[in-house]
Length: 429
Image 1 (tube, helix red, strand yellow):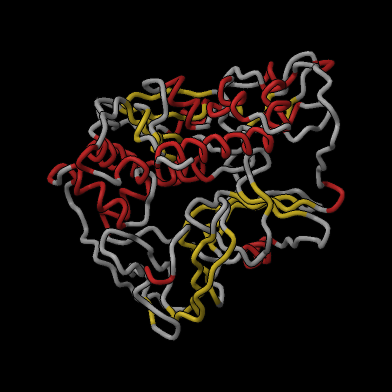
Image 2 (cartoon, one colour):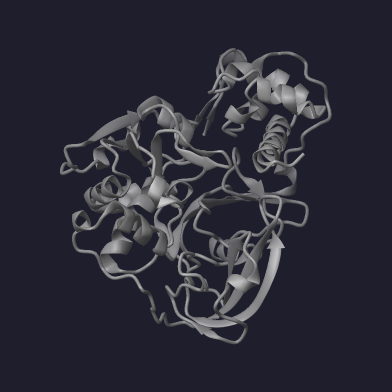
């Protein structure tokens, strides 16, 4: 994966993992846990002891979606610390072996017969949030200048998009038509790793072009794809409204959207790459959403040591898992196990001004200066030199010889800047 240059003169080339390992299906666990970020228990229309069915929307309000991926009985409703600064609503379901489907989704035979707003609503009802940040207010849907469907992944050890593209490329034409209709984008780009160009189908719509992308991290990050192959800037929503002009959807979700809407069944399982430990051999699984990480590790023949680490979603952009009972979600692409001797520790060492972080930054930030400003809480200065443009690729910390936690410093600055902008927008002091 890591190809270091001769004498360390040039930055390292980090290759994405291939998708050659066979995909195994993991049996259902005894229990699943579903997470609903930032929502109170009052938003649920089911309670402890009630039966639920696979595909059932558990949200009380009609405009919200919280899908059960299994059939079974609600056993517990509680809260967990969220990945942000708040809490996530959690619901545990004791699983029945046999799925019993209940869904309001009707199979769609022809995407072209539905209006864009209707398609966006169906996509959300099927359990996909890829368009949620820009479709919450359909009446002010912005102009999408380019749609990108990406078969590249978000981390070097993840291969969910590559795996889906390799196995389900026959659904790609449907996916392109669905997303072009839903976004009203005038053009579509299929971004494909250069070593997988042979999997591109011949019958793509005329308004879809293919871009071969070097299979090197961080080329698969959405911000970079939007800049290099889209209309310039990733479309996203924040407290100040909608900005950007390019929508990027990963191949796994794009392909699953078309299948879900055709069959009238929501998104309940996904590809997850699992690797690490002493043997280091990665495996690929298809996992039901809500499955505990511990259950996945058991099927993979791995376990986390007490002083080791579990990392969710990759070694460059992932986060430490606080418990092996944490569930797989719709955005979980990979699980990595680190033995005690493999755990990396950042150090409290001053910057040595080598410039390696600045040289490797894909968005040309003054990373060394940003790190120092953020370390001492000078967040106004961080905003002035572009901290909010950081895409969290992790390359700066990866090459830092002083082992400074640069990503953590800048991430903290970005959060402080966002809080300040939110206060200003609401009129608070």
